[in-house]
Length: 88
Image (cartoon, rainbow, N blue to C red; front, side, top):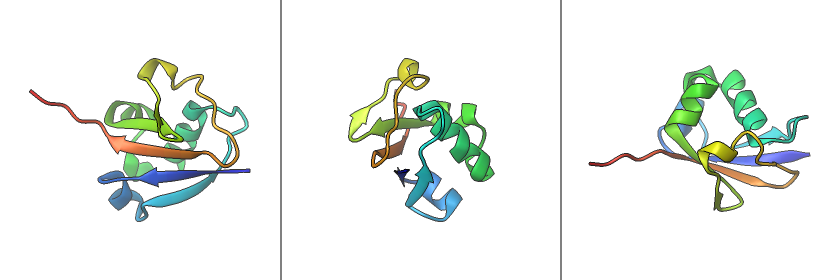
C-alpha cells in the first residue's frame, strides 16, 4: 500500500525528485506521512517546518492546518505539497 507524493519547488530540489512513493503510514494520517517524509529527507526540515512552509492537498482537496492531524491517507492517494504563499 502506497501514496504518491508530488513535490513542487523548493521541496523538489531538496529531495531531488518531483514525485515520491511512500508507504501508507500505520497510523493512516497525513500527519504521520509528513513525519515520515521529514525523517527520510532531513533537507526538507522538521515536521514543524513542513507544516509551516507547505500547503498539503489530498487528491486535489486542500487540507486545512487544523485537519492535518486526522486527515486520512489511503492506498492510491495522491498528496501534493505546495509552498505556502504569503502576501502583503
